[in-house]
Length: 256
Image 1 (tube, rainbow, N blue to C red):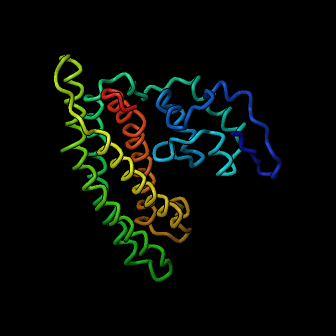
Image 2: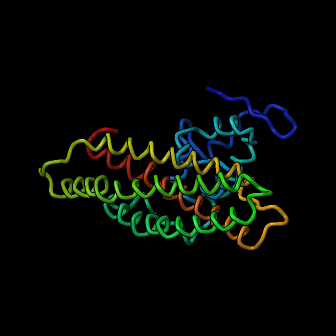
């Protein structure tokens, strides 16, 4: 299916030939980032969700968000030509190692930052909600996502990730019993990822893309900067699970 594109002048764009440089036909946003993590920076720049929304193709996303498909394709092609010292070969890691990495890096970061965000939200709301009533809603949404992610991380660490580790071990040993029933918890975690992403999208809209007003105090500015960093980390976190870890685990039991 082809989607007509529009640029800022409302003129339709043709499908770019150079998409073949940055992506392959039928490739999703999530698959593009899974192959080359440098593309994540381009998607983040244009507000394109490559984690929860990673199952869509680039052309479809550009149409839905009224973005210039040709321009983004060019930037994606260039991003793949750059050397990124900090990029890691996630797809080459054993699944159990990747799961441990997610826990040690992203789960730890999430647990550290949520209380910090809650404290900032409470302080800014108490001082500025009279003039900016949306701050009370932001505070409530942060409490909601903290509650949801708290139980979500526990379920991954106590149930799903140990199942994945047993799958990997079974494959290494050969002939060992393969744990069954992994499909349902994977789908449940993906659904909860989408719920968390939806909450963050509401926060982004309420905060004008984490842009404080000119009269904002330092705490307010730091609050929004921390929110933006939290969202960025969560996008990477969910991407690693939705687009690499979970598909890999499902392949081990021939469910994908």
